[in-house]
Image (cartoon, rainbow, N blue to C red):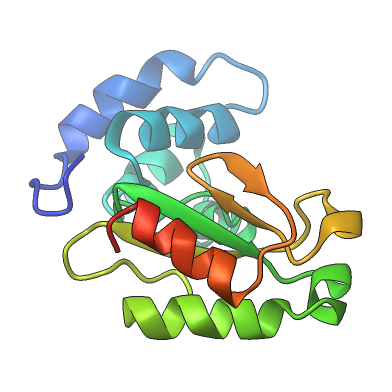
Length: 158
């Protein structure tokens, strides 16, 4: 879903997730279905899910906010995740992150104005021996310094 596309209507949301109510623990599959369909979990989905599953809206919101991979807005065309775990911090990820955030003019979880890049923190990409690490569009990259981050951003046109 494009950032300027209209939000899905509650009836559309219900039609998408209602077939999943028979699953054991259906909330997570429903959230994944919404994210897969729209690229994020629309705010209007919270009351629909709460109604279908006989849960409070706060419970649904709590699950969405607990899992950081669920988005509340569409992501940019490219998603850059920068590891913020201890090993990467020890190897200088703060400077790498600062470089990326300043160049893009966004804060964590932000998307550039042109919708090109979304930057997200992540807490371990499994490359602790090769930190600082980042992930760009699902590709994990180790030993990212300020220069390499600049090259990555050049590659995505940011």
